[in-house]
Length: 250
Image 1 (spheres, rainbow, N blue to C red):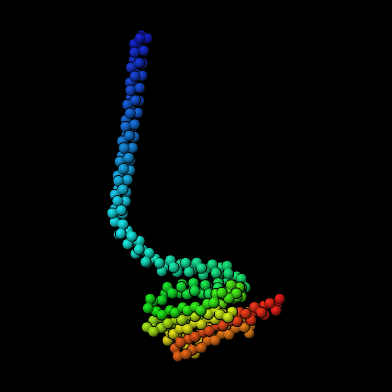
Image 2: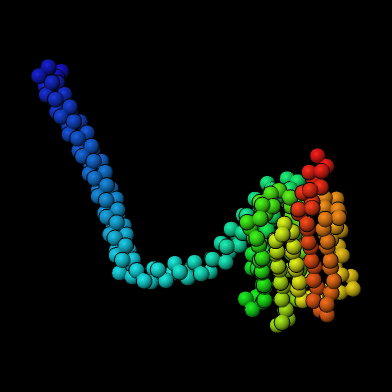
């Protein structure tokens, strides 16, 4: 039978061996952890080094970087400009068109933005002429007397029915506001596929006439006619007379 001294000796040896095994295992785990962190640090340092080299390349080639930006801008400008015009048109349709009247200034600005959107589909060689004769110092120019979207039908028809392929084709749009009278004249060379005899009387044209009759009655004039292969539409609204009737009706 083992005496007490021998038992304590073996117990001590077992405890020491167990402690050494635990410490060695812990050391191995810690060592693996350190190696893993060193690898991660090395990877981060390499990535940082590559980034620094990349930044140096940009600094060494500023003109190349600028030229790339200019190229992107030149291709994106037309789209950006169209989107900017589209934003203005959508704002007008969503908010101003719900009102009974807008100012001549607002309606003309809307029409110009609409034309810029349609301009995108035209060839650079296509002749699109926009003319303005605006006396913006007249008091009625900023008074709510214009029916919103009243100019859309004439402009849309021009882009829809114009001959966009002919070398001498054109669209001409003229805005005039003087002596408190709003005038819009739209002319375009008609495509050979469009029958002139119908004078393009569609649903849109009927609605335009009905709106003009309902709100302006005897204070407007709308003419549509064909001269050769050119279609011309002219709208004129006497806003001063219209305002006078509005005041009388109150």
